[in-house]
Amino acid sequence: MSRFTVTRLFPALLVLVAAPGLQAQAAPPDLSDAEVAHVAVTANSIDIELAKVALSQSSNVEVQKFAGTMLNDHTAVNRQAGALAARLGVTPEDNAVSRWLQHGATEARGAIEGLRGGAFDQAYIDREIVYHQAVLNALDEILIPTTSNAELRKLLVDVRPAIAAHLEHARMVRTSLGAGR
Amino acid sequence: MAFQPAELEVGVGDTVIWINRDIVPHTATAVGKPGWSTDTLIQGQSGQYVPGRAGEAPYFCKLHPVMQGKLIIR
Image 1 (cartoon, rainbow over the protein chains, first blue to last red):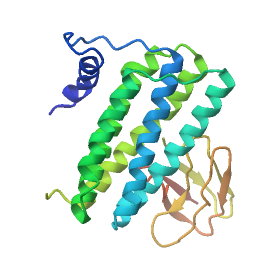
Image 2: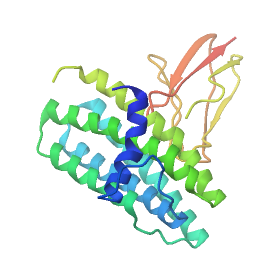
Image 3: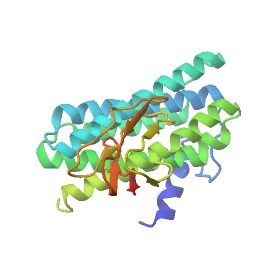
């Protein structure tokens, strides 16, 4: 699958999920800042929860280190997002993008939780690659463009390099695990 | 997410200081033998290293191995 296709996949899927029965459109949904804040907290929490699963189930050193970094980094980002939302008086609001992320996370967790050993490690890291790519796409195509508050937008822009580094880190770990399935 | 600058020329005995301006924690840790490392630095914290002899000193972030830097010590 080409990089371009992956990039375009997210909003198309999103619109399908958000508006069942309607034809898929290219236009991203327009979220309020309270909804963007909810997406940000949801996206971090999802990766924190999956990291906890990996920390308890994996015995691979590189996977453990990666999961530890995910736990720490996404916790740090959520702390900042929470503090900023409180300072701005914004109460995060549930929305279609949050639900779409949560739905995907529940499915992914169900698919990998029962795996053990190398099969678990590969499935976890594969999921992390897909997930961080999806979050990058969401940042670029939905969250950053739709956010009106300058401080909230700056936080999203500041977080983006960490998400990109996580994606590269996941690819490194994936290579160390080998291509075999 | 990167060390800025990624490459820095310093003298033996200079004090090199890393300041974490990022949201997430980082380290500056020697690649391979010398074994030096800053502590884990959260946002706003700094760590330092004083190179003892000339040469190239590659380093990375233990938490984010895609982050790599190098000191060129004269």
